[in-house]
Amino acid sequence: MRVPLIAGNWKMNTTVSEAVELVNQMRPELDRIDNVEKVICPPFVSLAAIKELLKGSTIKLGAQNLYFEEKGAYTGEISPSMVADLCQFVIIGHSERRQHFNETIEVVDKKVKAALEVGLTPILCIGESLEENEAGRTEEVLTRQISSPSDQKYYFGGLVLAYEPIWAIGTGRAATGKQANETIGFIRQRISQQHSMKAAQEVRVLYGGSVTADNIAEFVNQPEIDGALVGGASLKASEFLSIVKQTSEIKRVR
Ligand code: PGA
Image (cartoon, rainbow, N blue to C red; front, side, top):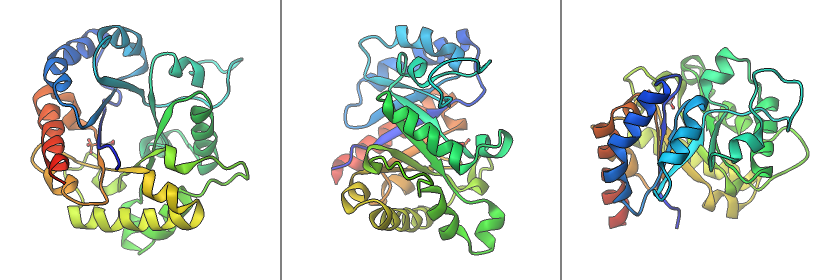
């Protein structure tokens, strides 16, 4: 059985004091929900303060990025161990990083490996652009994004994947539950071929892209979808709570 997971990607929003306030608003109720793994991913600068705040809480902490080198002359970068000191999860290869910061498949692969080496659980983001979708290239793009380009293989079942069609991110135009379920079914099939059947069964796959309290049920009602990576709606305490609560209720019934 795969444990459902809801992760909030706060992106480049919230100062430290705003982040602390948001956590204080969410924490009491989120802590009462037990059958969903709850992860929040605030900006780097807030992680240390929030780690303190979450002592004794069931809410887990994630970073939004890391660099793959362990230490040294990489001004401005954050190493895997630095992240592992504060967090259990790390978002890797978000489409905004692939697009604005030139993260290639090779770089993303190195980051996934580096994260696993220090015991972090990567939330690896994959997804096709509108152009690729319209050209019928979705499967080809996803296949490339889940094939580790180097020879050094790692166990894929230990990752969390977030299928985020780029055309659905921040646009208010989410995929349908059925569409996302079919695509995630395809992703599992490919993982089974490229990695192993065990990995395909164990890897948790989230949907991401314009998830709200109004549409979360449509996604988590689908058998292939294990939860969601939530952007905009994770910045409102009541909405994020509602998303986690609905996921807990729907996945409990199964
Ligand atoms: P969104 O972002 O929920 O605001 O569409 C999701 C994401 O980018 O992870």
